[in-house]
Image (cartoon, rainbow, N blue to C red; front, top):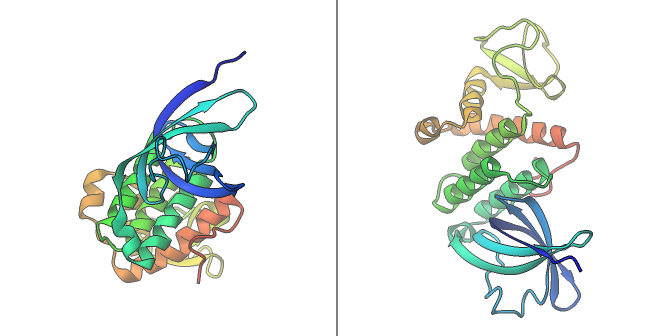
Length: 244
């Protein structure tokens, strides 16, 4: 008989689906295993193993067992840190759900995802601590895209190389920006200020994150463009923050 292997990792609960009266199919985004789908046996009844810890917006320490060809089984879950400030406001909830969805969709493969997990953790902490949720979301989205290798290339116009134009258009298919002279109609308008802000967010540097504050007008520009580009990379629409 093959003995089950035992694993553990920090994690966030992304989704929970009923499997009968007591069991749950639980999807986590973990630091050490990426997206992890487990069955939680008697998930809402076993206080010994879970103790009511299986909540969203909570940094968990989870452990699970695996057997070849079978779904992983959740063995234990405990609260490392709660971010209950999120549930105080609907906009915080919507944006926290968005971060969980984007992380899970952009990094669906198994295996350690320490950088993406750190971005998710930082985003949750930022929203819970009262930072503007749209700003926290733009920061996380930009870093997720860069970590995953989707770019985009914001160094200059993808056609002529212009770096300091007053305005650009973002083309999903080009994976970057094109100046107005090269493509006057296609793509989504994007100001030079928005391009520079996205470029700074993309770098993921701690010092830059600490001092950068995104004006509302630029945050709104980036909301439309980055959201659309994430969906383009995924090839499907996101559920948590539908574009208005």
